Length: 145
Image 1 (cartoon, rainbow, N blue to C red):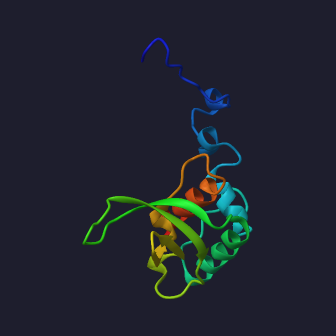
Image 2: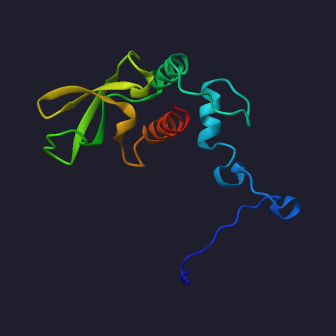
């Protein structure tokens, strides 16, 4: 560790209990607590699995909180790859339909093309107002599918 790096140790009762809790790392407003609040769950309750019902509930939550349209990045994964990473504009969320493994789809525009992409496959900078909402959704979707 360099002389300039500084280790921050959470101020908890770890010394008394000898154990770390998730709150020691994420705090009371961590992503799991924010996600639990969407589903009306108490702290410590396991996050719900991704189902058509829970996906619909998360869709309703995001629909009222995301600011549209917003600029995002998308990494090409299907051939032919024209641009490895490209800027897109997310115009709106689409109603959940089809297999839950696709998650929530969104309508996006890039250059003169309009298409649909899984919301979990797009990214925004950390300082974007939609960042925390998108990161929390990706965390839930990828860990609870």
